[in-house]
Image 1 (tube, rainbow, N blue to C red):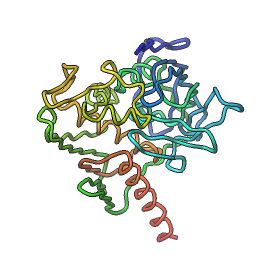
Image 2 (tube, rainbow, N blue to C red):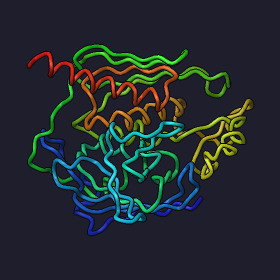
Image 3 (cartoon, one colour):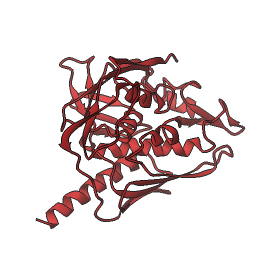
Image 4 (cartoon, rainbow, N blue to C red):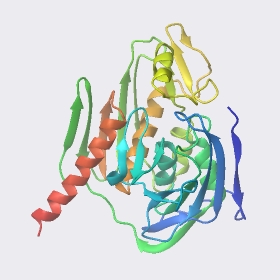
Length: 307
């Protein structure tokens, strides 16, 4: 895989400075670009991260399609969640959006126009570090419209076989994740992380570097199903019975940190991360998105109860 460095148009000075978060919406100060391979499509894709007016939210634009259709990064546009999160608006789709969206929401970017010239967001090195570099290079611009918090009103949970996810009301967002694999190199891992609105750089060090991972015995089957055609040892960790095929790891518990990164990206489809303690065990994009939908429903139910 060839990954091109992130570039920025007219970078601000000093480079990479991110202003303190504010209770108002924010967008990017400049345009940043990146290019790489799509994990599942195997296609080379370019993307431009652009400022957007307040109230517009985060949305993708398929610049390679007639009319350049827009696809909002919202729960209403989720199309499928098999090994990644895919969004659809009409006939236009965009896949593997979770890493980029996790970086944007963690850096307080409420509004962004994400111009992509293919069906999938570039995987880059399999982590969100490239997206952090792009956001830091572009800078963050405060806007005027207030940002509305999302306070969970009651506990919600979902389960699929032995996998589950739950959310409990809390005074701020906290995420806890557990995984358990038979492979000795992974085993059981737990990690808890609390987004810090005063220091998005914590995301850059604690979560963003964690790369996607796969199991060696599943690779041939997944490729026979038209999946992970762009995956390689350059952009994904691969684990077998004897251990990791491409060490070293960036964290001792890199796999569970990456799962938590995916969770942040999927929860971003709510618009903002909820004020809740979310706990997941052996979950998936399907359960992540399902929980986000349940959280959104509690907000509707609460508004109806208070009318």
